[in-house]
Length: 219
Ligand code: DX5
Ligand code: ZN
Image (cartoon, rainbow, N blue to C red; front, side, top):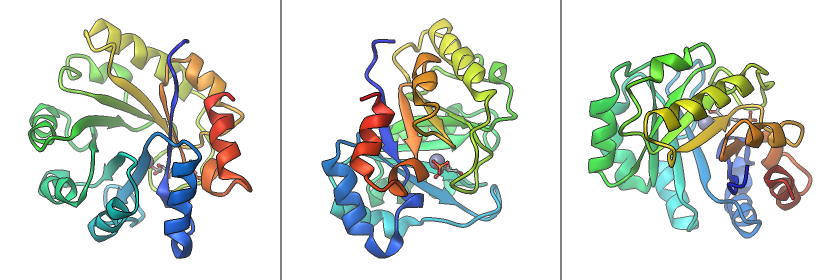
């Protein structure tokens, strides 16, 4: 794989009482994106980051903000997340089994369009659904919490997702993986075709986040 792998630290794992320093630290360390997890306590069991925080984060960094909506009704909130400073917005196929309209709406708002699948969603269900996708997110844990263990079957799912993107004429779409990503699996993830690694615990809970980012990138 000669593609350069992007690293997207997940803000969920940052120290909320030192958020400004945490963000400045990963930006200086060469993070490519900042991943922003939004949970509604309904689609997933947990409640996390919201629109007001996103507005503040937008003012604190030049990093592209990659907003992962784990919501049962993302369509209600797209405009607000767009206005608050998202650069990309990802919604779940589990919520929108026919995602074309919502992806189109994200594009109309001028944001990159992401589609996510949980670990139990057959990759084949994405067939015919990728025309409007800029970013395909293969979850490697069941969403809801940081710090979970990587599900090993995700490697094969990534490889199949990468082949499907090529078969559907979307080889340039980004293939992202999220959940349990760390120094022990990053090389295998890149080899399987992932070109954007989301990592919370492995970056923000590392003693040296800059070194952790370099290690994830394969440095
Ligand atoms: C899980 C979130 C992830 C999470 C990853 O529901 O979507 O982005 O923050 O955290 P780690 O890297 O700790 O598994
Ligand atoms: Zn996420």
